[in-house]
Structure formats: C-alpha cells, structure tokens
Length: 335
Image (cartoon, rainbow, N blue to C red; front, side):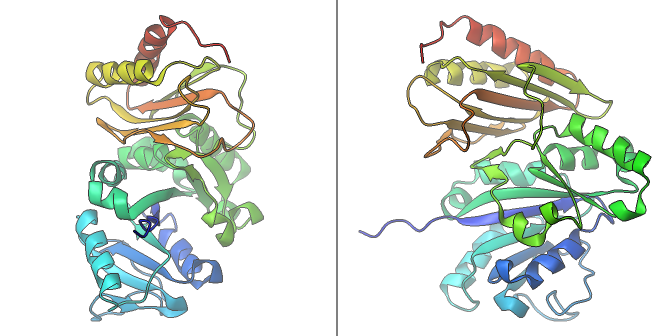
C-alpha cells in the first residue's frame, strides 16, 4: 500500500484595504521559489495587479499563469474552492501545484478561514495551513487598527506581520505601529517589506510550526505569564517548565473553552508533556479546536511549554489565570 501523499501547504495572505496584498502576491508568483503555485482570490477582492499572472477580464477560471502557476476565483466557501482545485489537478486539467496561496479581501476576518482548516476533515487530509501573512500599512496601519476590528483580527491571527510602505512613514509612526503590533500579535514575526528579512524567498520559511507561529526574534522571555492590552485585542501568554500529563492538560482546556465560550479569538500553544518527549501543538480558533498534533522534534533548544490566548476583551487573562489554577493542582513530573 502506498503512503498517503503529504498535504499541500497553504499560505494565507491577509491585510486591510490598500495594505499591499496584491503587490506582494504578484512578486511571489514572479519569483522562481514560488513556481508551480495555485492562487485563490475572492471575486470581490482587490485583484488589481497589472501583470499577466492575474485573471484577465472575461477569462474563465482556472487561468494558467506565468511561472507554471494557476489562478482560480473563489466565492466565500474556501472548502469548495479547494475541492474544485484538487479535482482539476487530479483530472490534469490544470498543472500540478506545490502550494496554494489564498488572498482574502481587505475587510475579511481571517478567523472563519482558520476555523475551516481546523473543522474540515477533508481539508486536513489534503491541505495544511503553513503560514498566515498579514500586510500592515506602515503609514495608516495604527489608525486602521484603532478603527476597524477586522484589522485587529488580521494582526492577531498572523504568523508574520509585513509592514508595507515603511519608506513613506515617519519614524514616530512606525514606532507606534510596532508598539501596537507587539501588543496585538506578540507571537508573530515582524518584518519590514523591502528588507532582506522580508524578501520573497524568505516567505517560504516555516513561520507556522504545525499550527504554532515561530517565536519572534528578540521577544522577551523574562516573564512566564504576561498580559498585553492596548484598547484593541487582549493577548495573554504563559511559559512554564513543568511537564504535565496530556489528559490533564486536555481536560483543563476543555474547561477553558466551556467557561469562556464565544469570547476567545485564538488559542495556540506548544507543550512539553510527561507522556512523550515530542512537543504537542494545540491550535484553536474561537470555539473550534484542532486535534492536538505531535511534532517530530522541538524546533529549537527551548523545551518549555508556551501558550498564547487572544481575545477582544479581558477574557484571555481570565482564561489563562483559570488554566493556571487548574494545572497548578497537578504535581509536575520530574524531567
């Protein structure tokens, strides 16, 4: 019996109106590193890239693009769009593709899309979300975050935040934006477009470690439990060294979800448990939790457990305090 094929990675590109999503995607599809990609765009989205690689007016999908890529239009149902794309690939009516890039509309909340990756069994078998890239306007980003909840959600769910138009912004404006980003998305990698760290080929790096964003370079690890609030989203993080049994942790998270149902935007974590030496990744969007996954290896020398909760109100801090009380009842297992 042949082994099941590996799920195809999906890169979600989000960001508010005018942040530069389509410009970024055009550069991605132009780059050899992204050859053989499939692009899904929303039919009411900001398609306007003046290049041959996007759908021409009047052309039916799927459209064969330069660089061996394929572009399809999707409606609101991502599941149907991915199924159609997969079917066309199997029928060989389109070339095989190595990854899928999904462009959301500028006013889209990415939470329902992330929830679909968690709740849809077919998607889980055939595709895996490899990164959520959020574009943030360097000039208008801070103002947008304060005015639009959708922009807050786009930042809160990001694995990597890419600041665009930084060359047009003042140092004071960029500092304020960075402060807001550190509060609303402390787990995300912060990159500035136009720098080597944000080069197109670097966007293929594993920002998302099977559901958990890679930690931001230079992020402070001094405080094991910390809460951030800046009037937008509340983010609470907790880091601990105790290795607890997975059933106890799972039961505690069930209690958290039931107690704070409808109030948590995002829960993500990488845990060291007493049942195995491999890290356990947890990933939840709103009230939907992905089945826990075991990584083959720890991504770094840091073997501590870390959990991030994000909410629109103080629920993340309340939930984390409740989780700590639940887990503190259990004796830690000696390492």
